[in-house]
Length: 499
Image (cartoon, rainbow, N blue to C red; front, side, top):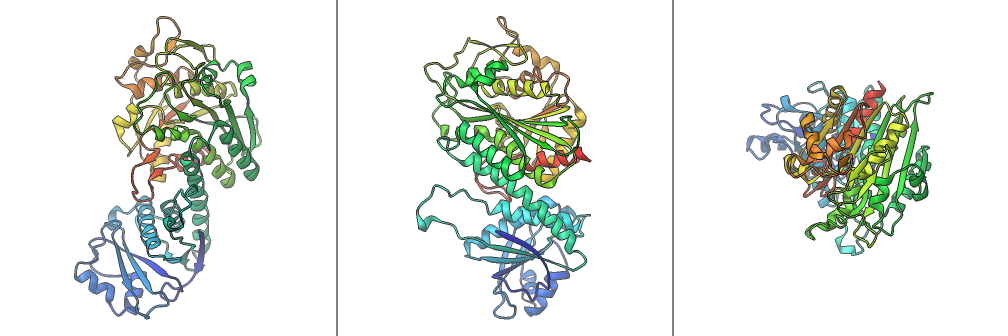
């Protein structure tokens, strides 16, 4: 979809539909909706008086112009109570409205910078939210559908209207919103791909193609190189699959120094059967998405490359399958990670933390000042927080606070989980330095404490996206299937750190 910022009057624009907003509890009309209502002879005001338009959040009311406007349709979108308006509510309302219009075979939409000037929401932030809402809300993954009668309509253009004096701010906000939304949708595409298409090799090829497009440095380490580096944990997980493991490294250089300011590490299990500790068959097809963390950090790098913050960032993705082949890892086996620590395998289905152990060790060896890892790590986190919040675990409160703030800005909720030393106890092994499962109780936390063993004193945050990486239904700017969480959060964090 093309998104353009233009100077114009909402009552005179030619489009298939125009979008205006109304707040719950407002006593009178003002601004653009009042201008549109005047041309319509008070039709909107009459519907408000009759109670058909209430202004509740995401409420959609269609009014036909009957030739009184250049556009045939006027959509009145509810933004809820004005005092509670946020950019995330704008983002969600626009997403809902665009999906509704797509069902009506609308190809061109015009709107204003929804919510600009209210609750300290700038023109730039409002336009960014509108752009993100449209692009995120209209996302669909239809690549493998061939039936013509099952294809969705397409909204080809969104026009955002503003004044001449505000145009540059609107364009800046729209450009940033487009970059962030397209990166999120890239991650969604990668996660939605079936595992026979998104193999570790394909994931590496995708990273190399993106690196070329966005001028990022890229290297992909092969099995022999991983062995030379002592990555026994990653190689242990990979030994049950015929697909070769790949260790993907992307570099963005935003300042003229050799320092690595931030390492973004993403779990890249392209299919997780559980290995010898095999998973139940119900919803096993969803395990193609166990590389959502890896997809998120790769996609975030494409946005960072375009926004050009003055900071050096590296993305690291250990990629492999976890399958129960004849040479697969077994419960009771002992592996040695890159940092020299030995790991007793209790469950081969706790493989994500194994490959991250080597990836975090690698990031530490590269001298990363800060580390963030993203992983669909534990069902325990999904049980604890559902599909609403991502769990955050860390060893540095300042970095955790910045991460939570970056998520709030993106509309991606994050909840901090405890990391008391007492949670290390269940991970102790009688035969190795550490074991890879600490039991059922506090499973998300003991998994995070396992990862902490490979971070040591480096400031670090672990994001467990097991619950938030996948959506069961459409909800505001999130769609069914892969959500792309936390691409925009990661970019926001990097931008904040660069300041």
